[in-house]
Amino acid sequence: MTKGTLYGVSVGPGDPELMTLKAVKTIERCPCVASPQTAGEHTLALDIAAQTVNLEGKELLFLPFLMVHDRKALEKNHRALADLLKCRLDAGTNVAMLNLGDVAVYSTFAYLMDILVGDGYPVEMIPGVPSFCAVAAALGTGLTAMHRPLHIIPAGGMSVDEALDLPGTKVLMKTGKAMPAVKRAITARGLTDKTMLVQNCGLPNQNICRNFSEADDSISYFTTMIVKE
Amino acid sequence: MTKGTLYGVSVGPGDPELMTLKAVKTIERCPCVASPQTAGEHTLALDIAAQTVNLEGKELLFLPFLMVHDRKALEKNHRALADLLKCRLDAGTNVAMLNLGDVAVYSTFAYLMDILVGDGYPVEMIPGVPSFCAVAAALGTGLTAMHRPLHIIPAGGMSVDEALDLPGTKVLMKTGKAMPAVKRAITARGLTDKTMLVQNCGLPNQNICRNFSEADDSISYFTTMIVKE
Image (cartoon, rainbow over all chains, first blue to last red; front, side, top):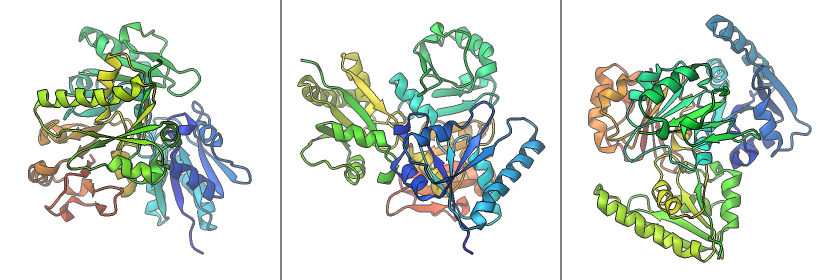
């Protein structure tokens, strides 16, 4: 039997209208919709898609991702989730796996894709709007200056000082626990006027701060900061 | 009279189905559609939108952007284009200005937005799919590794060696004339197996190369390279 195709469908940053036409059509065509499920995020990607696409009659497959740092435990979890998808693909069923933001940018999908491609399954990625583009739009600011680089830096990706030394614009994602260190470095460098942030972008509890000096300390995990030159 | 709103509408990287629902609705609602027009790109953004949205009966406003390096000449050009938009906005007309990719990432819109916001006009950005996300999808690869940064580097943004020294994934955009230097550096560092590229992503003449050693020298301006660690 011909194997089904796994589609990695980007649903964008939160606003269901920021789904692409292709994402909507792909979900509509697939009889099975897979949604990552994590302790913190719940099923945010599915909540977004369900506001735009009629999911009635489709099989919903929840993929419980572990949120741990232990590489071995993660690999085992990913392999088990890939096996869950294979059960549907082996039966010839096309599966749309939903992803918050863009499927190529810090997505859970990428881990499963690597396993499934390695095992000979057809996989297709549907690109989407990454969260940092929605953050810039919410702030009403461009992310880049002419001919200058743009750096997307997740918590733990580089030291704060290494990051702030880079030329061009810096986007600091999921800063969370590192916030006190980030705040000290930005203040010490006199960058508070160049730093903007958005919490929970596109969600009902979205909070915008155009000048870092106005930011309070109770900053959530879903905070994105833009530091300009 | 209430001023019209200027919408910066991202139309995505090329495939009209990669427009968002919000982009389509915004263009549909605006009586005037403005499209950047450059010697090299022609009116690519308009060509994309016209495949999805019925533009009949709308005023099409072409914005001839200068492609020069002289800052003063550019500023004068931007101010003249902003004035063109103001003529419509002052009459209370909402204007959708189209942008290839995402409106916050190396967009022509950002320059006009800064002028118009400064002069008190209401401006709204509609985020979209940036080209590098479509490039990753076309290659079937993630852009990022867990907790590792992602760097978007336009030609001239950093030296090739500085760029390749960065931790995480490097996206080199519009490499064009710098290609021989980039090729030497990537070969010298043994990174040909870690380097993939797409030319003219999403267009009929799209060309994919998964291993840099297979890339020929006739590489066009619209080439995006992904260099992994």
